[in-house]
Length: 493
Image 1 (cartoon, rainbow, N blue to C red):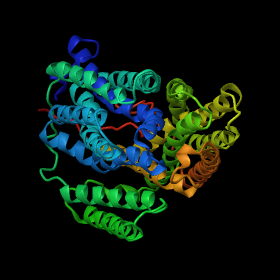
Image 2: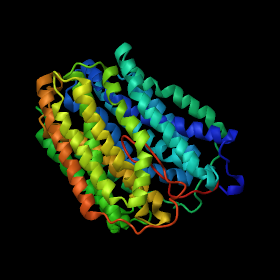
Image 3: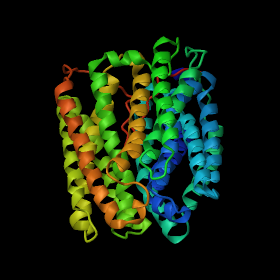
Image 4: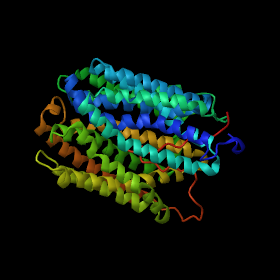
């Protein structure tokens, strides 16, 4: 969209565009934070073990992780508003199916459908802002989008916890429906935009291989340690998953318009940042999954109390992420991205103190605050470093790859860490066993963060100071599940 026809921040059209995109992204944000709080209630209703709860999370993560890059390409090619609204409608319909799911298998399938809808929705939300606002107003618009998205992340566990405690876990999925209706109403004021330079051929082969590879590998990782599992089927799916992922990399290297641009990894700074992303977001994904369940199963918290216990994490991120980004701009990313994961590790090691007789103020809150401080010190410098490691014309692709890496890390962590620490079978119903497994998981997550800190210290290089400001479109996000996405290009309808 040419700047002569672009939207000016503060006008009525700008408010409609911001409302539509913020409400749309809030659907995915809410779902990412609320479901963790509801897992114990879902497990009780469906008599599910740890593996069943893992699938409630990972089925969503598989489709979202594998298709999110394809979703951005679809928006560039067919219209960002159109694909964004398809994602909203898809996500809403899948949420309704989640709410009425009669058994665990239907819920898991509906969650996978939610992830596919999210893959269409998430890239379009920020892409619409970049394509619609004047260049000088994009920074303010993205800042508003990020701040209010962070509020949604903070409110989600509280609202969801109250619904689970007072009514039923099914209502956490019904929450998405009025938001979807509001997005469609506001979208009447959102202009369409495309990227006229985008490739006309989509990497469908890569998308299929990514889904098959992640789904098969995750199945083998979750079901392999489960008692009574079909060992032959586990081995077969594991081999299929690895083969599909290898084939995916081969296709991405040869296809004309790859979903994953492997050439980006020729940059040492980009590669090191993504390895750090994988380790840190892997630890984060496992902690958000297991900590909430631990508080409810072991300490006897209600869903509302467990959701409120994570509120300091979001508040610390909101208050200090942008300051950490500014610090990294002044002194370089190497120290913040080395110190941040080390502090996160300290918070995880403190979680070993959380047990049956623990109090929130003495044991839970200090661990959450230390972990949150490390995460806040890490995230903004990490996003900035990833985008600064490549040419401007590749910034959207770099951001998309980093977002996908973060989501895959969380997906694999939820699949791998519970069985690795002995949380299999009916451990969900055995508080003492679950507590011991949670302590081992916290220590393992701490070592993952320490490995990330060491990699950043050895692998990152501070760029030479520049006398130019950061790009106006740089997202200042408060991500709890993945870094903010930045679209690759903007264009006119």
